[in-house]
Image (cartoon, rainbow, N blue to C red; front, side, top):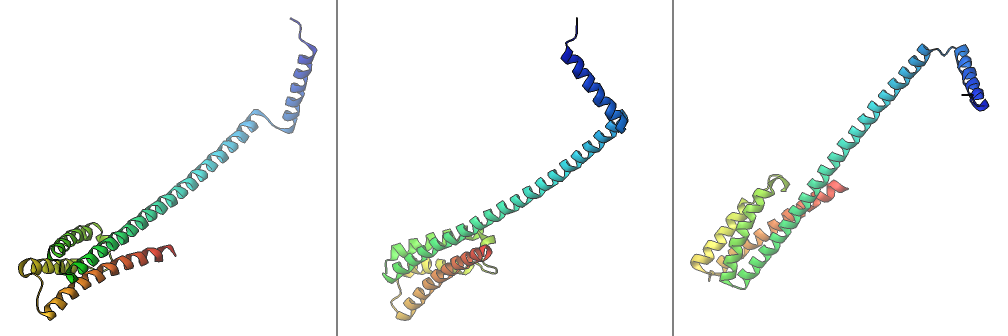
Length: 186
């Protein structure tokens, strides 16, 4: 089979390029060395980019954990704000001398505070305990269930004072937790 003239020309050009490369000193071992260096550089670049990706992933994980903490802290503030509203309802029941509603409010609030205190303990202000509020709620409930509303103005004032203390402490917790969240953002 006869070769086409363009194939001969192409082969001649390829041979000329090979000879020129040989003249410049590009032997097979030189090409091998050059490719080895190129592969090493590519491997090092791969390691560097992998390390950079790992650093970025670590940063993203920390950001996600911080966001989750912030959300849980805000949920804690909202939960104690709702509990403060329940405490306000207790105060209104005591002021209106609605015995059944006041007892139910005190019992429900004590129950919810015990749950919230255990569930949200790590988000509460440092050194704060809900034990006093729960104890006051139990005293209010017990007093109302056993004796009803006190007739003496001083005893009634003390009962109302306890209810107001509960409400104020729950508002204070909610505000303190909310301030800590806002302080972390700023």
